Length: 216
View 1 (cartoon, helix red, strand yellow):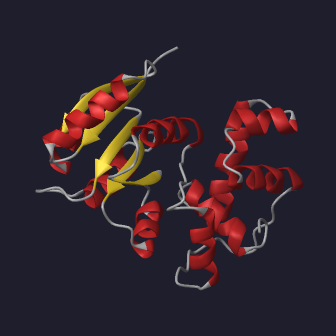
View 2: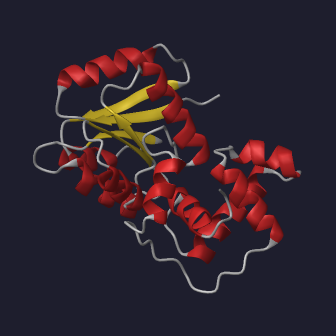
View 3: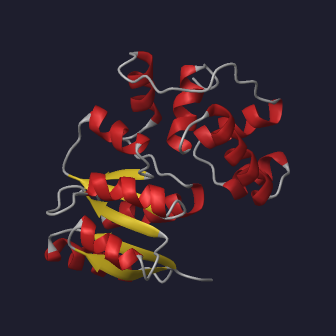
């Protein structure tokens, strides 16, 4: 099985070293490259592409927020896991809307970091308690957040079924098993949902599902 290739972008060498030690315990993961700011990261990505970037927000020259936007535009298949000290709700959602695939606090346990890498690699997103659907619900229902969805969206029964299972954080393989489809077909439906609803990523799909009462 091929390893999940990881890039670490953080201006604190001690954090990068600690993270590398934590990740090296897992044979399925490989740290491909390191950068101490967004600009260096983008330069490195011109020659080597990881599967997942662990992105610090607060970096000199170019911060993680700017770098995430560029990565999303230039390398849509690369997943971005943001690590930060900030716990502000609106801030987290702003990042998820700008293409981050997950959000972790810097004091997260190594186990959670490993879990989140596998989750974003397999599902395209990782929701922990912080970015939890409860948080999304709260924001969407309070209308602090007004995501713009396409108008008059008509979802087939199968699409609704897949959307509900996505909201339960199931992988494409798990969804496929449950509704007797191949993971590739499930991925195709997920992509169709993203296009139909007019969102950028799975976080957008979950927001849509919550807003429209498809999930509680």
